[in-house]
Image (cartoon, rainbow, N blue to C red; front, side):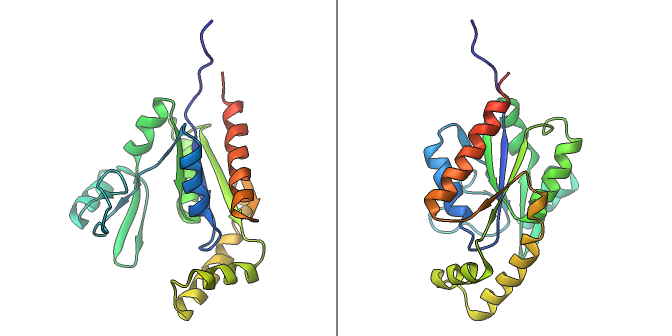
Amino acid sequence: MSAPETSGLLLIVSGPAGSGKTTVCDRMLTEEASVQRVVTTTTRAPREGERHKVDYYFFDHETFEAKVQADEFYEYANVHTNRYGTLKSEIQDKLAAGKDLLLNIDVQGAATFRDAGREDSLLMGKVVTVFIMPPSMEELENRLRHRSTDDEDEIQRRLRVARDEIKQRELYDHCILSGTRFEDFEALREIYRKEKSMRVR
């Protein structure tokens, strides 16, 4: 008797800066061996220790724009002076091979994937979106200040963005009310395992 076949799953995680989504996603990649990170693309220069095709696909602006014109991205955006995007080939080939993927992306990017999931035959039925909801704006502000990486203007900007992002939480398949890092991880892992079990055929 052959083993049941499973289709690849694209698990998309969003949440405001300070929600802990990056920490939770990193742990998922460490503890769930079947899940692979989607390697995204950027025009910024590599930081020390970063590797092409491992941490990011590092392209110059001309190469990035050529790929935009060739419709090779599912989504892309300008962030300050750099550009970021998700290549179709990075996702399509792996999903077709039955691999499960994890993508940490903002609400605009998630919206693009939701739309693509209704039109792109390679994504239909494979996209699962999860929003990590801070317990309160006060707690989110505390987390941002505790990181000690941003000045006051940046903290206030991130809080304004967070209020807009939170309004979109109902568009997601799942919403995790953030607690401890362990609780958030367990909630995300449970969502992944339930969604995966539904796709065994």
